[in-house]
Amino acid sequence: MTRKFNFCAGPASLPESVLEQAKAELSDWKGRGLSIMEMSHRSKEFVEVAARAEKDFRDLLNISDDYAVLFLQGGASLQFSAVPLNLLADKGIADYVHTGQWSIKAIKEAQRYGKVNVVANSEASNFSTIPAFETWQLDDNAAYLHYTPNETIGGVEFFWTPKVNVPLVADMSSTILSRPINVNDFGVIYAGAQKNIGPAGLTIVIVRKDLLGKSLPSCPIMLDYKTAADNDSMYNTPPTYAWYLAGLVFQWLKDLGGLGGMEEINKRKAEKLYSYIDGSGFYRNPVEKSCRSTMNIPFVLADENLDKPFLAGASEAGLLNLAGHRSVGGMRASIYNAVPEVAVDALVNYMKDFAKRNG
Ligand SMILES: Cc1ncc(COP(=O)(O)O)c(C=O)c1O
Image (cartoon, rainbow, N blue to C red; front, side):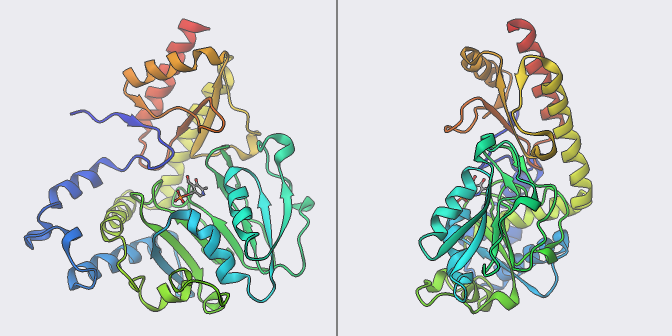
């Protein structure tokens, strides 16, 4: 079997070597005669796998002991609720930046628990820009500021970190581990795993320890960050297999030299695709250049009647999952860490050929 190139926005491509290792260990993990997914989460074996994964994740992002790392379930979407439930208590109001379809979901959920002050909104540009920080209407009394460093659907990414006096909360679902960040700038970082971390079913939260233990009285025990922090993310049964696989991805990243090296590769991949799109006269990316995502690259064709033949031809050429999000149409190439540079080369070659035949 030859593996195809998968440009899915999530669940996304996983490194082939990780899949091979998982396959080799699937039914008999390290000679124990059973799969890691059949073991108790409290077994010595699994506890070691879990601890190793956390250590490697901490190493990759240089996370200090001031932060807890939580391995949870429920996806990034459940964090839209967990964030206000854990952080809103004292103040009852939070600042949110609205830059697209994921931020609006976070905003709507927070409004169920308190007041939301939308500090900036890029709707007027159809979410193709990021409002300049100087224009943000911050509330002096806000409990935290929430933003979405990479809007997966719109393909809009922050290449700067807002500097505010309140805990900064970031939905990093589609950018985490794509490049180094300074975790110390943040109060809470959360991410669904199914892009750069591992398979769906796992959600990672990095939370500054001084923010623990302040949840709203109505916060469910399972959504209280302190519950997970006090129990090594094992208050109940965690998603053990996804946690194990994430650990393999972290080792793969470390073996590649960590996030600095990954960033270089990711920049090169994105630059290849954007520069071809911009020069093609046939394809177009709508996002302002200063905030074009390195991970998710939406584009439209000169004539939308060509969308179907484009996707059919791509699929035949082994280039999968290039349709844009159902809400926006067009195309989108998600080029996360595990999508190799040769996949981007193959995509550009296919796009060139398609444009020549149809332009
Ligand atoms: C930026 C962002 N936030 C949140 C989500 C929702 O994640 P989940 O499906 O894990 O709830 C996604 C999913 O693609 C996303 O890209």
